[in-house]
Amino acid sequence: MVEVAPLSELVLEKEAALRRWLAQQPKVVVAYSGGVDSAYLAKVAHGVLGDRALAVTGRSPSLLELELEEARALAEVIGIQHRIVDTHELDRPGYVENDVGRCYHCKTELFDVTALVAGELLGAVVVDGFNADDLSDYRPGHRAAAEHQVAHPLAEVGLQKAEIRALSKALGLPTWQKPQLACLSSRLPYGMTVTPERLSRVGAVEVALRGLGFFDLRARLVKDNEDLVRIELGEDELSRLMDPTVRSQVVAAGRAAGFRFVTVDLEGFRSGRLNEGLVQLKRRN
Picture 1 (cartoon, rainbow, N blue to C red):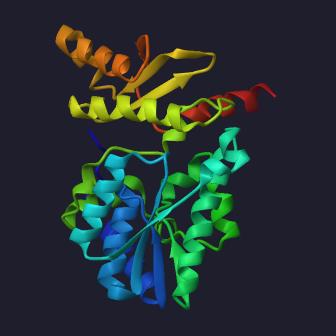
Picture 2 (spheres, helix red, strand yellow; picture 1 turned 60 degrees about the vertical axis):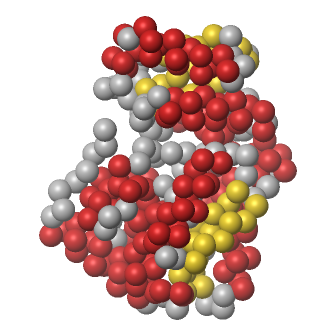
């Protein structure tokens, strides 16, 4: 299901470098979603800094309630101090309009909030789970991080996603095998207005499909057709749809969320799919 790197000496040295980096910080505030990267960073930060590390999670309609509860529970297991704060990206026109810079507005809201929290802890540095693999994708949120002086220790020491999974497994974190996640707004094509209702509908489909045992998945909306949801599944999961019972359950999940038509993308799921059109557009121009 997931790519896990061998736990080589090089990988262990990267983790040692991460620990050294954290040890040099007086305090850190971890932008913590409960995903693979931020959970690993929170775990290591707590191990190095103890009560000088704080995890902060933004609560909004763009985050599944299920994910919020899992993040809360994992922070408790890790032992790190955890604060949940409400974010209001849906009050930002640039986010709601959903152009190619939407992620910038989302991260600006998040880092505005984390900066306020860090300001309460004199000398605290805000860190996030940006890793070395993220450098190869279109990430407008990276600009927001730079504007807020957010540090990216995982990327700085060269840790890649597969390596973070391996180290997470060694640390006993259940997130080592967690699927790749992203803000629910990434399920809407650029140019489609972000609304709580649309986020809720795609979120409901994804929760239902996870309940059916699907791992890598996205439920995406299609421009100019509110009746249709396009589902992406992992390459090794598409074959499950050959079972009529499973197929009918998938359709039922879409219908329950208010969609008349439930389609499946035969190319399957892959991270960064939303941005592929941007690359093609640049090539044409």
